[in-house]
Length: 448
Image (cartoon, rainbow, N blue to C red; front, side, top):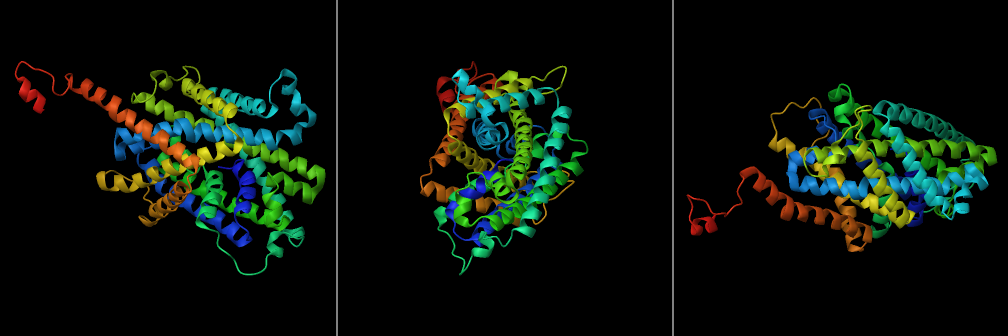
């Protein structure tokens, strides 16, 4: 979960709202929503530990058509879009500060430095995931614990020593004014992106030891921890910047470090954020590839995507297909477009997955559930309502990112209904409905 979102989203949110209390409220709502989603999805992961993320549960809950459409929306938008957005954001904000003039070396080859570094990040981390889950897991631990520790210590120092230095927390006066619905929805989209990853554990559920215990722990515990961390970081940003200044920082983490700690502190925090970005990219690559693998197993994706390396046991074809699509997005879309593209698709898929808990409670009431959703049915309902409201507002505002996500979903669902389902029916029965048979005359066949 800890990724570029917490550092590039605060300026976007600050540009939409003018009060620090409203700013913090949006981050709190995003965290509570993600926690509600994690509480619900934990039941699915403990009940039926599978690889492939949302897809197996959506297939159980809604049938193959909706699962196919959701799976392809994730394959085309959610994971590649997230990877592309995070890689481009990292290459844009972190690499220039760390590498200096060395950042520009691709330009000597006639290449754009930002997109080249972003592409190299995805290729490098895909190679690591190719080498096995254990290697990727240890990399994930290393690049997460170090930056989290440094960021918490740094944010604490900011709030203790610089909390009265003209930041938004001390400059705010007057009553809180709620933003318009369109402004709140536009601000919530990057917040939602920053919290994305709260459901990541279910994507490797079949590869986790003691999933009935560890999947709920990782989902709920991880989401709660990141929510607390994000709120602390946001308070730290407001202790340093006014709302107008925060809206124009571009990337809040290194900007705050430079103002408070000077060049050396900025360099340290930049390195910590880069590690966090690598962890987020690595986790997304690890989890996203399992969707194509699971869908290929059911004949819903190209057959080769289910192939695993005989040496490393990883879905190598799925990993590199995901990398290829992510690279295409990097070279054809801007950072802002990638962010909105991925976040809007996440709202659609996340809502369907959380509501699958409600559906399966009704259709599979007798199956063993080692963990049951806390606060059911209010927690899944709260998540679904918050997501649907944002989607509806964005649709009314004609936001292209929502229309693109909805279009991918509709096209995939239509393709399954028109092409794949008749083929499946034919394969199952051996004879098309209405075909002639020695025991059925033509009129009877037409009626059938």
